[in-house]
Length: 114
Image 1 (cartoon, one colour):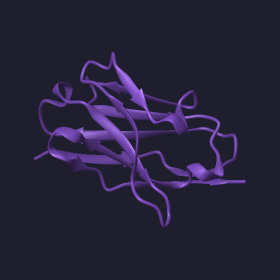
Image 2 (spheres, rainbow, N blue to C red):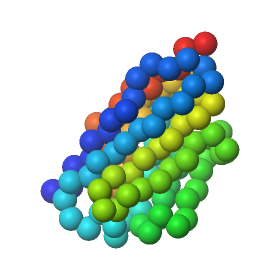
Image 3 (cartoon, rainbow, N blue to C red):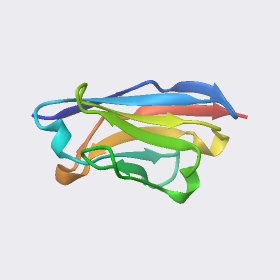
Image 4 (tube, rainbow, N blue to C red):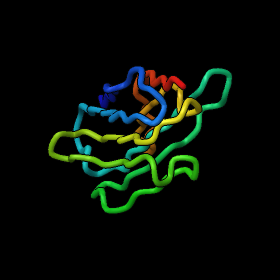
């Protein structure tokens, strides 16, 4: 059974950076696209970024383009989200997901102070 575990969240000041990691257990990690999503208090969960299995193709929501970078290391079964120039409105619980079979991680809190 595939499990996804996020790490790397925390509290950061506006303008700062954080890198989230999502470690996947189970087989065939390198055969699947992976994505990051987030949910701010009182708001719907929203998609942030997706990376294809080889890592060569990435897509981003408009509100993170130029600030966030999704990447993966298939040898480590891990997907990353590098977040730069963080804003208070980036405060949310961040989730990784394997879209093909709707598997989600437990989520990790990111808080950006002004």
